[in-house]
Length: 476
Image (cartoon, rainbow, N blue to C red; front, side, top):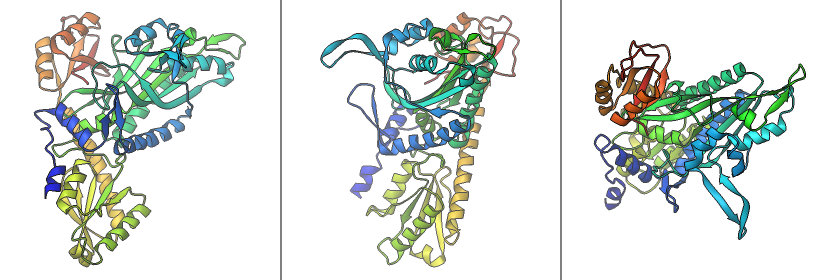
């Protein structure tokens, strides 16, 4: 009994102390631990397994778009950053710099990559000679470092894992189309694999990526109503091509600068999964990326034939491609139920002597906590069907949660009242930076995304004619 109580530690209440709930969950489910350097995290095997599944799903989608994986150096000469003024200004506060190596001072300081536009632009300039070399589409899976003052595991750490795709094209139209195509790839993946509904669209000039012509984002609503920028896709125009001399010989014989894009998502997506789907019991993981999709818990395990039946069931599920774990430890079933629920495993199977005699198994869903029976004979088909249903239900539940918390506001008082209640707020915007700044100053909400296809007559801040509808929200 003491062992049970030791595991089932109290986690903070999700409704009254969401930040502490998040910290409790990521630590107690062994997703991460804190690194010895302030602001860093150690991704533990359970957390890294989620990232591996995210990688696998995304990488296949990238390759279908003609993207090839490559790898670029971690260390970048500081002189590279000075070539694109807006870019270096945007990243200057976050850049970590190496000044000494081998016991000697370096001739030129080296930046630890906060992003790789500069080094990839340099290499593209070397590799691209003719229109025949275009489009060039490369992606790298790597770590980056951004020296953050305030950190939280997965959401904002000094070092994190991500992918960054970079493409070069002959025309602006082709590059802009690529930017939106990759945004669409992200949206499809996040909704269908992570079960997180997102709102996609353009960022304001204030919020766009340093050095980009246009930044497109996908914004997700977390359990507490705050927004999480879950991925971005940037149209760079010729800014980086001119800075790094990415030119090609056109088919008419003249040298022209290419048009480039970049796009990326990171381990922040794991934080999004936790904060979108988690509940008072801990994690709730979508089946597509859950390290363990199904756990088998033997009941009265010491009785003859129970473990053997569980092992046979496990083999059947594995044969069907299901990621399954058999918990044959000597902990009590109640302890196991609590442990696997906290770890967010989508489906639990309980199998005991009576079930075996009846040819049935008990299925317990993590998303709804509902229990049902299914025949052992067709176990794999039943489990697969239920995992699909869980995945679908998680997306529908998250979408309903978000849609119920999107409201309209016509003035500053309305924006403030709405964000105080944990809502996304749609409001008219005149396009003026000063109005955007005023919303942040008075409400702590920022402009998240420009809404396509909607209009308002007046700006909610100044009352002048509105050019766009914008979503304001407090954000991570």
